[in-house]
Image (cartoon, rainbow, N blue to C red; front, side, top):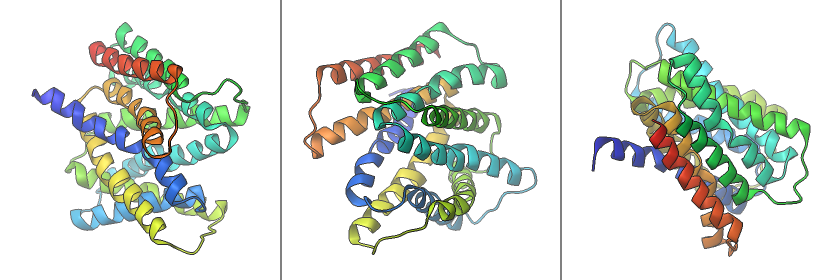
Length: 281
């Protein structure tokens, strides 16, 4: 196995695990406010990693860490939930899937990366695949929801490109700890304004939050930022298409959801889009 292949597989684990967020949230955290889930996903995981790292940012990195924490977590997750509430789930996922296309052009503007036709075509194929996977024919659209979804995609795209531009002077685990902690702190007032209503805690709540925080945030973002440091931003962003694929497959495996013909075609398009993204690199 080549070093590049290993980097691709390890980075792909992150969005594949993120695809479990829907089933974990709906099955284990059905009555917990979404912004509270986002807060408890980011801040405890960041503090655990920070305790292990025992190192704080210095100088300009305080500002950079809070900018990246906002783009990758606070702003992105907040807009994601606004989009999810205002749009049907499939429409929200489809709007958010424009992120790899944004990364291609943003990386060209900020990093000087070439805009290759294969990378653009791969992003469009992946977007079409996500639409086939999750979009229903009668989905009602809402302007505010669409705007929030697009803004959230741009936020994460900016975070991806700036993470590559600002090479951290510390190990990736420490860098991830800084961002998760900063993003979690910025989410505190958002969660309070959204309503900190919390049902009586159960074992399911603790299990769900442990999975989303320790695995779905701490582990996956270490792998994700590792991939950004080693691979082209457009390649990393295209791997994000694996998230809705995983969500659909988990729904079929655990919730007895059927996989339709268009969804099978969507999986093929997503995989084709990822392959084209690698070719474009």
